Length: 206
Image (tube, rainbow, N blue to C red; front, side, top):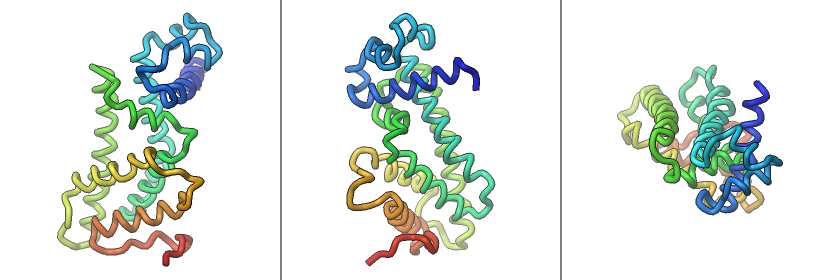
């Protein structure tokens, strides 16, 4: 990775924290420049506007999704296992506080306008299409008549997982591993009408 791209990613990580703490409207470019150790002019050398910076944060967030979730399941051939791992990876991404780029994507979705918003939405649509196609494969593999349209199931999955950043605390009563188990069982029950085994290392349930 080039020095320029690496610096931009560093700026995105810091700016994501500032936007998370102050909100997009409440944060200034001066706040971000100071936090990243640059002058305001130095910050504008890397990113020419606050709107563009928000886009770069969201674009980086989508890169993280590609690199840490989609790339890891690419070679998984079984549709159910691939969907299970995708769900687990997406949950992990949303609940990890260090990846605030993902939180900014979710929380500041309406702050981005015009062509930049359309570019991010196109990347999001590709992920939705991936989920819809994978869910269709799982439904076909089950041999049962689908209980829910694949597109609706894909949006249900996204709504269920993406809202976690609003309420879930990893240090709370439910650990992330247990959360993944519950969410996986819950989703596959709705998708196929049956409980879905999450593996031998799944948490025990009362």
